[in-house]
View (tube, rainbow, N blue to C red):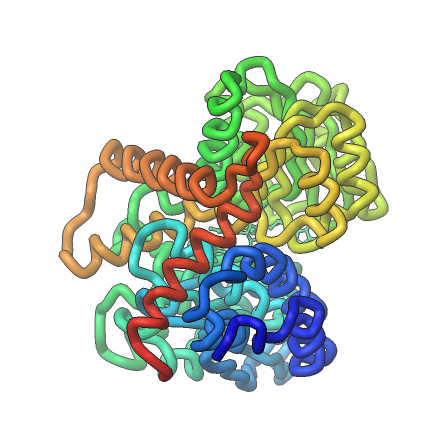
Length: 452
Ligand SMILES: NC(=O)C1=CN([C@@H]2O[C@H](COP(=O)(O)OP(=O)(O)OC[C@H]3O[C@@H](n4cnc5c(N)ncnc54)[C@H](O)[C@@H]3O)[C@@H](O)[C@H]2O)C=CC1
Ligand SMILES: O=C(O)CCC(=O)C(=O)O
């Protein structure tokens, strides 16, 4: 088949839209990748002949199931759960579980698609998957969360396994929820295997998994700055979110000499001109992980800080670097233009697809340092991969070794982005670099298998 027989980019995107009606997030993620891959494969006949991009953009399977649980008042509640197994060409499906009312099949398909490229970029043998439910943990008692997690696992357990599919946490799923789900898996199967990552240290978890995503996003940011002869000392940072990724990104920026100005949640953002120092970050961790409170409470505790409510986002605050760590599409084209106008020189995405397609083009055109989530936030899944290795070998590595491996993996991802993303004028297009490097590894494995 000649290259010219292959459909052009607009026709390809049109096909993705037609095959996935009402799934805008999934279409957006595929389009962002396809824009780069089309250039790369223009003269590579095999990728066309074997329809590699078309196949990666069709999940291996989407499992949808009912999750039935009882609330504290005795009412029966019914939710929907999913596991999207996107691609296992280079290893078992791997990716988090999200509990949030905004979860839909489209959201999980986009996350599983992105995860496929991200996991390939880590250099570890992991395929891409993602799961979750529209269950809202906000306001639920610990017993309600436990019953929901157990019920979710009552169906999920038959689709996962240490060499099949290894879920982990994501929005609304942290150490507590992983404990409930792992306990239920163990009870159902009578097996103790590394079927989930992000486990507690007492039962097979890995040191630094909790910190890894936020730390990794800042290591990636530092690599981009170092490439320009700069570092984080004295730089101001705007961060969105106040969960696992946001608080650990803030922690690492503080450690590296930067000053964090903002954190947020779905109700708005706090701005602290004095900087959100480590003791303040610890206070936020306690607020979110134990008291399960709202970020607005910060201003009662720390004088001189401000809360901007009504769902306001922090992108108008002048900063040197920005680290979006909340959720998808939380930074639009206008906000991207505002960041650039105010002198922001680097953006490192802790969240998955936090920038809209228009925003991505703004950053690319402005030629600022811009790291997409699939490269910048890969530290979390990378340490999950290390947790899988430790579980298989039945050993636990020391913290220094894991810290070294995390830095090493993030530097490796940066190098792969530089290799495939450096433009003729020397500018590094990290989006292009990440898309091509991730694609190439998965695509070459698929070619080796023939048509399956
Ligand atoms: N936990 C992990 O290891 C990894 C997480 N990520 C991504 O990082 C992001 C944050 O995840 P985590 O910190 O783990 O979750 P989390 O549940 O610990 O925190 C999520 C944060 O985002 C905020 N948020 C959620 N929806 C929002 C909305 N509509 N508007 C504003 N804020 C909103 C929440 O208030 C919370 O502060 C997500 O995009 C996730 O997919 C990416 C890689 C790994
Ligand atoms: O650690 C994992 O397996 C999942 C991490 C994740 O969900 C992500 O990278 O978005």
